Length: 247
Image 1 (cartoon, rainbow, N blue to C red):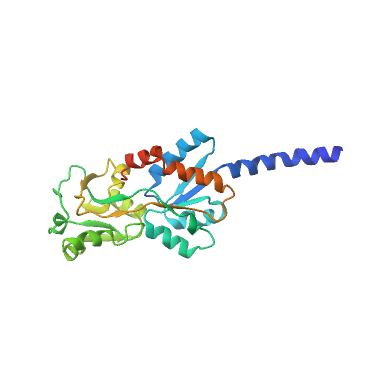
Image 2: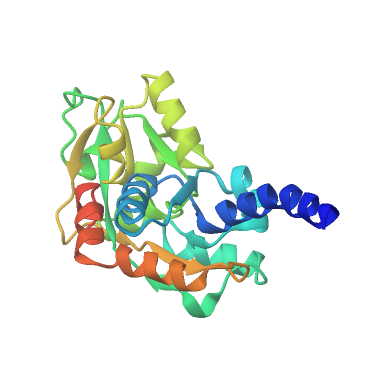
């Protein structure tokens, strides 16, 4: 009896730790949607008692961890989640995929807009240096925009440097003042209010990209994950995304 009691006392902390780990939902994706995802996670946790931890940034930074304990994935565009699913079919439940909200492309410029940039055509002027993110949900974004107005050659000629993801692009924007503008999502202005002004594009000229989510095949809490997805798609969730620059 004494041996059994000792065994129970020794295993109780382990059970508590396991329960704590299981109770927390782990959500992974790129840095772009981090703001609204984090705010939704906080509010959902307060309302339901189920904590949600959002880990975001370049895929290489979080993928090994996600392979061990992910409950939900999100993308910065539809193609991003498609690529992740194709690369890791045993990790993502493609049948659970759900679209949340779209976000529009726009132009970020320096505070005060010193170069007077108001249109895409302005980006083809001599003396304009553009920052480009050629990936991370923005692959082909500027080309889709420029192609409509036959501006591809002029904009390409003014690209100072291309970066593989938004984290690298943001670092370059902050460190190198030679960049005058960046064609990206309008939502990035909400994360860079001190470093950028926003030049919106007319609805007829802009393009939009989606924000999909999909469950992990390895989640141990599918019912709670679906509850969180329902919250993301609720009026409250939509309001949070709109605050961060989504439609």
